[in-house]
Length: 467
View 1 (spheres, rainbow, N blue to C red):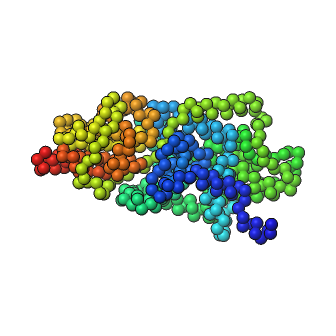
View 2 (tube, rainbow, N blue to C red; view 1 turned 90 degrees about the horizontal axis):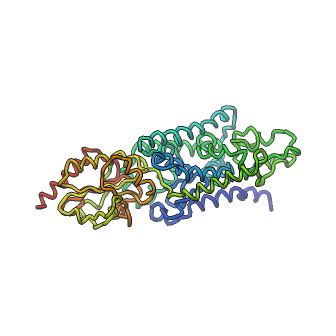
View 3 (cartoon, one colour; view 1 turned 45 degrees about the horizontal axis):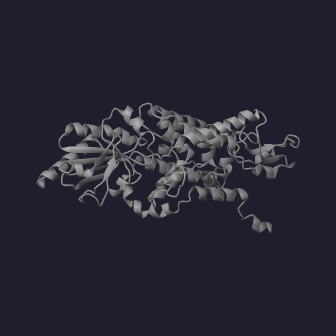
């Protein structure tokens, strides 16, 4: 083939990157509907960094799964998330970064823009250590700290992750069906959009800046660089120690296959003796039995403890959901965690307060005591039910038992939240007057003053109508 033509054709690695990104986001219907796929495949984690909340995502992000598992560790051990990362690390290691991560593909494509480039240096090698600090603080430390207080907070997803902003937030908000959610965007969204712009602009001048300096998932996989079954290695009998492999690499490597090596194999093209090879390798420095036993253990953790993965939800101010206030409340029935059922019809003659929440939603957990306070304040006038999301339900009974917040807890079977125009954004509160007319319908965190005011409005509306 003519070299002038072949230089514009994608390499085998680029095609694998593209295929991986398309496979991770194969739910094309999500782009049309503006919703999130919640089918059975969402129980599984894809290897690379790909946001759970992307409209087309068919799997969960391993980093998001780890954070949510640690955030819920006060009621459930994070066995599945740790097992899946151990399994991927032992088998693939940072080969995931070089071949199977959409975030890496985006950065590499942006780097192709013809501009002056910032080359690697001693400073960038020092900055490469920053991702380990991000891992310890935002992925492990903060979620565990809040888990001890039974307040789930996946800090990296909520405050930093630019891929989550690009694929999840921007992906959802770009759909006209979600136009009503623009009014609920606050400072956190603005902050993350700023980080996204910085990340995209930086990728034009720096090679993979997010991977090199920030990405906690890359930091995790780097811990397996010496023992992962797949990777690149140098055949010592052929190596002449010319150093071309390190000099040509755009990552902050000190040698082929170290913690900063993404196993892309590009250095092999520059090796004058062909000493760099790619192969599936059994670790030679460790007993084969130990390596295989670790893989079997990781696979067992994944198989036995596989839960439904969850997404992170940002704290937002309450905003009115249009088109529903003033309508009659649709009839619904939900199963109670304490046994039996709750039906909307049993609340007729009283004000009905429905709170949609989830254990993995920090704002939801913080506002639940307000609904308990409402029950105590108006014991004869209102009915309250706290309906848990159907996305992630494994730890709900244990959380309820330890929470100390006494409410009628129910499970959203059959998509009750969708009857009120809701979806994956939580918390959400609906208030219905004694005549069955919706007087309040909002997504976002409530305060006691707001909740008390809306309950009184519903009570007054009922009395004016003769209720």
